[in-house]
Length: 196
Image (cartoon, rainbow, N blue to C red; front, side):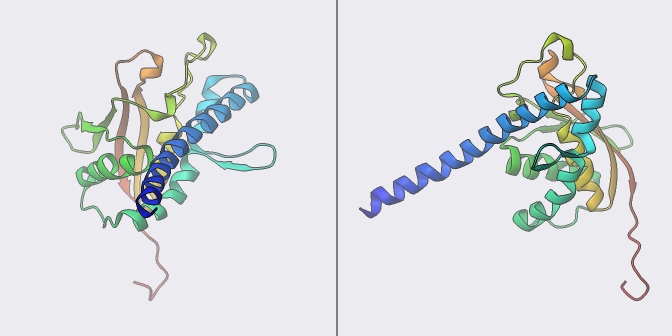
């Protein structure tokens, strides 16, 4: 009896992870579809996916930037990752820990600028687009723009201002998906006097 219960638990635990990611992918697809209906052009939809708090019907869906602002606390608590010393270490943590933890993939970090302030995350696969085909009338839609907002929001909460954008997208015919990240500046914390 114990062995079969243990097997059942392992089976359902892994199935839940798969179902949760699949449910998220499908729910996100429905949300993007609704945004495309609500807004007249892809540029406006891209902006909405990147940064807004979208309230539609009853539930509130925090997107992009707002998800990143909230997700960083969960990430720091679950990963036990300390403060990164530089942008290269930050890039490695994003690729090897954060993407693996939340999307189940490990993008490669490449195309560093000579100054070391800009790099690319190359995603061989993007779970957000598993069941997606872009219609011809949405050729400028950056379907996964949510990821850019999440990265910006999360990094801002650890005092790092970055610019994040898609350079290539497999959904639009490119061989891979490439997210380009550029370090802008360190954000100084303004602590009240005596709290240093």
